Amino acid sequence: MIPAILPTYQRSDIAFERGEGAYLFASDGRRFLDFASGIAVTGLGHSHPHLIEALTEQANKFWHCSNIFTIPGQERLAERLVAATFADTVFFCNSGSEAVECGIKMIRRYHYVTGNPQKNRIICMNGGFHGRTLATIYAGGQARHTEGFAPAVDGFDHVAYGNLNELRTAVTPETGGILVEPIQGEGGYRPAPEGYLKGLREVADEYGLLLMLDEVQCGNGRTGKLFAYELEGIEPDIVATAKGMGGGFPVGACLAKEEAAQGMTAGTHGSTYGGNPLAMAVANAVLDVVLEPGFLDRVAETGAALGTALAALVAKHPETFVEARGVGLMMGLKCVDAIPSRDFVAALRDVGLLTVAAGDNVVRLAPPLIIDQSHIDEAVGMIGAAADAWHGAEAHRA
Ligand SMILES: *Cc1c(COP(=O)(O)O)cnc(C)c1O
Image 1: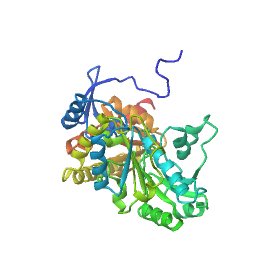
Image 2: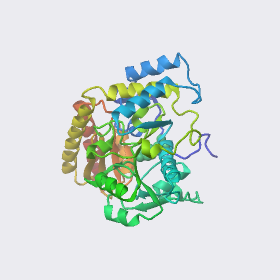
Image 3: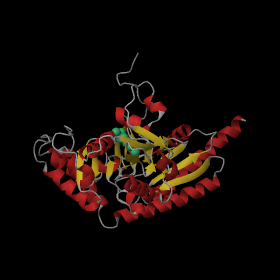
Image 4: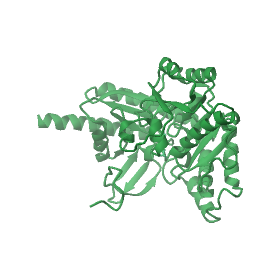
C-alpha cells in the first residue's frame, strides 16, 4: 500500500524533536552533531535566538499580503543584497528550483527583448543539479532525474564541467547563456578548477551570453564569501540562491544585473509566496548575522581548519577515503569504490554524526557556519571511529 506520504524519498526513521546550535535531538533522546544542516540550509545552526526573534516578531504582526502590495521587508532585503553583491535587482521566490527557473526565463527573455529570440538555449554542465521542476531536471540533465518525464523541456545543452574548450565549441548562434554551479553540490562537492569562472565570463562576453551561477547550495556564506563568485573576483549576470538564505525558512532569490533583467517587466513572472513577510523577516535576520564584520572571515578560517583535519583523516584512512575536497564549510569526503558513500553516511549517523551522501561517492559535510574547532574535532573523531569500525567489522567477517 502506498504510504500517506508520497514515497519519493528514502527516509531514515529518525525523527527530530529539537535543535540547538550544531546539535539535533531525536525523539528517542539521541543527540546528533549536525554536519548536514538540512543539506546546507540551516547555516546558522538550530534555534538561533536572532532568527527566532525575527520570525516571531513578524508572526505577531501579519503573515501574508500578496505581491500586489508593497512589502517593506522585501525592499529592505533586496536593497541589502544589491549593496552586498554584483546585483542591481532581486526576485524573491521560495526554493532553489524556482530561483533557477527565474534565471532561465530571464536569459530567454533578455535575448527576446534585445532582438535575438533565437538565442534561447543554455549551456549547462555534466554532473550539475538545478532542482526538480521540469525545466530544472532537464537543465541538470541527469538521466536518473529525467527518466519517465518526457517530453523533455528543450533548450539545454551539456558539456563537461571545468572544460572551457568543450564549452567554446558548444556555443552556437542559438546559445543565449551559461548555467553553472561554482562548486557542484549534488555532483559531489566538486569545486570548479581555478580560473574556470573567469574563463566562463570571457566566453560569455565574447559571444554575448548571460552568465548565470547556481549558488543555491554554495551561496550565503558557505564558502567564506557571501557568494562563491567572489572567490574568483568575477561578476556574473544572474545568480540563483536559496538554501542558506533563510536558515531553514523556505526562501529563494534570483539576483541579476540591470542589463540581464531588462526583459522581466510587470506581468512576466510572479510567485504567490515569493518574498512573503515571514520569509523576508528571517532572511534579513540571517543577513544581519552573516554580514557582521568578521563573520565570513571566521567561516573561511573554520573551513580551512576543517579542510586540514579532513586531509589528515584521509591520510590516516586510505582504506576508506580517496580525498577530501571543497571550499570553506562545503567539504566532501570521497570514499573508496568498495564503500558506497550512502552506506558510510548511515554508519556515521549510527555514531551520532549527520552528513549527506552526494554523487561521485562523496560524503558531504555542510556544518552550520557557526561551528568552532571543538565541533571539527568531535566530527573528525566520529568519522575516524566509523572508518575503523567499518574495517574492523570487515576483518571480523573475514
Ligand atoms: C538544492 C539545489 C537546488 C534546488 O533547490 P530546491 O530548493 O530543492 O528547489 C538547485 N540548485 C542547487 C545547486 C541545489 O543544491
